[in-house]
Image 1 (cartoon, one colour):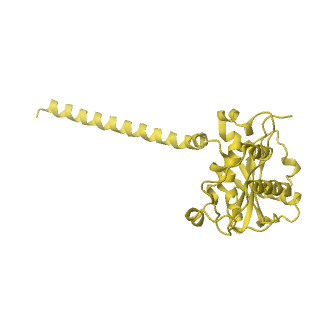
Image 2 (spheres, rainbow, N blue to C red; image 1 turned 45 degrees about the vertical axis):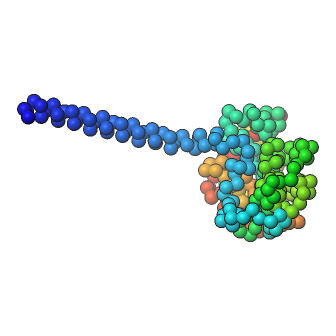
Image 3 (cartoon, rainbow, N blue to C red; image 1 turned 90 degrees about the vertical axis):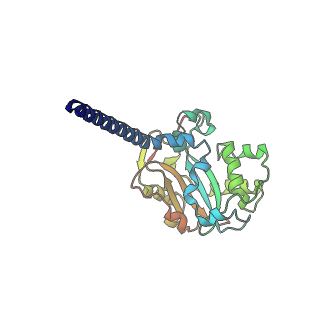
Length: 262
């Protein structure tokens, strides 16, 4: 091979290596961009049902292995969702959600009343679940502002209560009436930073008998999602170590402002 051919072959190999390196670098940049965008894109793919998006952290092996038997459980968790966080997660789809409309400034709303074991929880205890009449669903919209949420909660948790639908939703209302929302959280007109411990303290001050090990604040990486309060089967506040251990551990969280209303 002549020197000129050897030189040409060397340049071709160098060009090929350079092009390969460029392609690899581009692929790394694309993957890095996708990783950065994932937290923003994920909420839009989860769908509008609050319950389906937020119940994962409570799962354990016992809950996953068995649907459970209606009426066989130890206590309840009343979950109060901070509606502005959910609506913020919905992005452009928020305008299609009654919960996120500008007609009423929803703050804390009832996510659900969940039968619990001391460790884990039952779910979907009757398949198919008994039918819930439309008037009954509509009667709960002042507390749970989504028809799909009301139906989902009955199917997933209400069927494990051992009550019929009327009895379960009546109990949901009584549980909500037992809890006083601190006045400062009836409405927020601007973003507010708060420590989870301070939020818990406000709830304890407004609800005599509620102790630190009887509740938990749930958050994503930066925003308040829910306040969960543990109750006995007769709706007295009670300790729930497993729920408490799953509480939000970040030092500060954001509470987005409410949407609409006067």
